[in-house]
Length: 277
Image (cartoon, rainbow, N blue to C red; front, side, top):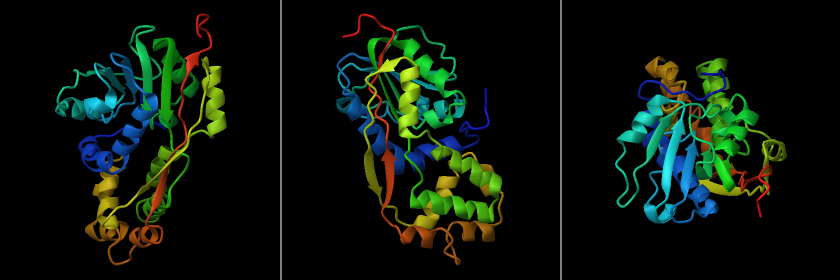
């Protein structure tokens, strides 16, 4: 299934995602999410919408002793990159599964913890995806999901530049990455899916990027609009990345310290389990 609002990469975009966006943006958030999960020795963890495996690539001392990770993603290109990454020394072997979060080909009650970093906003049927997470959890299992609270000045500047120099469709595709639920609305969805003790924790990080214009072009090359951007003329790409017109660079430098917000810490236990304590 490839619904319109899903974030699907093709060509070399997944490799660029791992090389450019993971270290600059997603790895610090993955470490924060895992820290909040407080994983226990030997727990079985499902990473939904795992991408290139940023959670599995964390060092064993961050994950915990004997933690077993299964990564699930719809995009085979992302999983190919994940499989190609060398495992951290001492880490358990990761199981990679290609499939949809809406219909996981995984047994009932087979995981102690479900993690989902920046995936919820892309699920075409969020209630169904959350029910699937409930299904694969053991009684007293936990789910932790992170979503952006909204656009940063950097993201807004990039989207506006793309809309101006590439087109409205490309800009609309990029904006979907920040189209998450309101925190209270997501909390309500989680409770409807059968979770209790739903908590929301805000996290803020400041990211500093040098050579913003160059980073913008590399960022776009790691997104679903990569092919469209690559097809632009050199002169348009120069403008898009900053160049003489300072298209994105100027907007970013006015707000050099931009913020990423993780507003969901979902520590969940199924309401339907009568033996919960």
